Length: 324
Image (tube, rainbow, N blue to C red; front, top):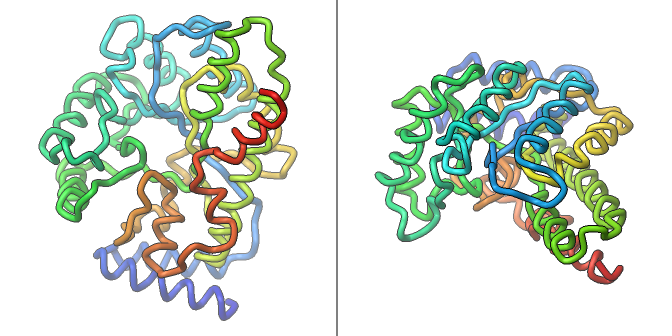
């Protein structure tokens, strides 16, 4: 084990002990750190689905099936984090979510109406009810897991909300379904839909090219950050959304990962890594677990920080410069 690996192991050990993580999980960290380098892995998760709102080019059923077909072609088992108010609370949307479970994908909880716990107007009690209301709908779905994905990846604007929600999840045997590889696919999706609504025959090649470059840049940056913080490659958990852009180009996203030499794993396999049992004291608002760890460890704004937290601003500027 290198000096860097040992240092980062000790940091993990301290964080784990602060959070009361079982010793076996801490020992697992040492095992992972001591193991030889292996191929980078990534698990796919999709938030906000299933959406039954209409979009250009595809109906809700077509979007849903396109995502499922692409995952099947690549042999990928993913997770759908359901925001029930987007459609699963209606027969049409429930059937779309059910199709994910029947295809062998995991089903997680992403609240009823997608509020932000970071909002001053959102109480802890109301946010807890959002989770419970969604749970009542999704618990009958095949593939149901007690996994909760915070909306906007925000754990609350006060320590009381943060700690209260963490205790609530533990009380209900739910796990925090962390994201390590955050993307701004939602920003590209909004751009894509805006372009198509203005011109249904628009050339979309520039949006596709910049979108794929965005995914690659984020993947490589978060891999580098995991190596800096953990001294190893962690199994990345990537955040995408149940939206039009991925219905159109998920196949290209997955082929790009394959060309990079990355391998797909299930979300359950990724979450088994001890890094996903940590609970950083300083959550990064709306960002990756890795960024939260960086804050907790006092890393500060490292080189490349801006590209990870800009919500795709640089990519939008590039498209604008290209006349898109």
